[in-house]
Length: 285
Image (tube, rainbow, N blue to C red; front, side):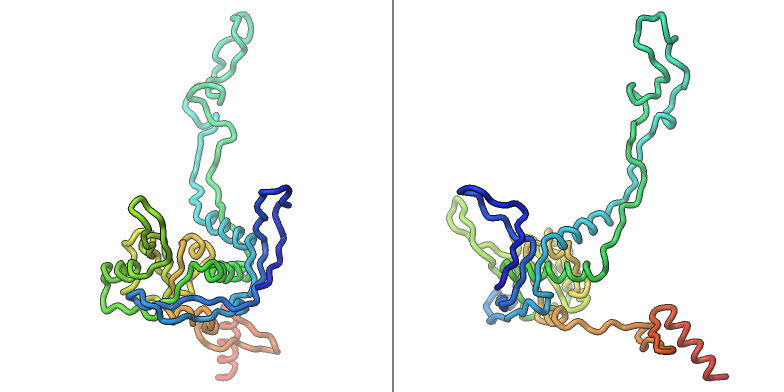
């Protein structure tokens, strides 16, 4: 594994931990364990980092997570300014002669019940990074799970019907480490932590079986995003989901039809549909 280390802060003196690199470049293959539903080992698979970009950028993943969180904000916060609160605009008392400090309206933000000065107003926090950056951040998040030994491949996950007890048994059977307690050493299972279960497609039985388990989230591999992958401590992928990540299906255009080509220009989306319709009308004429 080759690492390109660009430290955030230069470490000085003894006893100062070396800063974590902002950018990690991976070249060596990563071994990920494979288990069955009973937790028994079924060997391992080797992941080529190049299939996920071969790089892990902490800054890019940070930006992608901030974008996701910002886009979830409702932006409905609202405070009343001095012109919006109830109360008279009459001057409280005359300017001079009372011995008090001069005062104007009682709706000022200086007085109890007055308006808020420079308070928040409804706004839209949504913004978007470039699509390629978002996709790269998702690949980096998955690759970081492989690198940190926080991922496991499930040989097969097929349920005949929605059954929470079955998914609970699977998570309890897969051991991911040990912890020391007052009673002694104890095995840590996937049920003791947060888990993201990745399936090849939308599996209703798996989704309905796991949606009521706290800390467990089920998503098709095609719907992964950087925030969801990083939020859950452990990543569980089926073999089919791993294959879908390594070899994503080609993206369809024009509702599955080939893009329209006119004068050497490839038109996609609505423009492609219009060009194809125009060509069809011209052929009939």
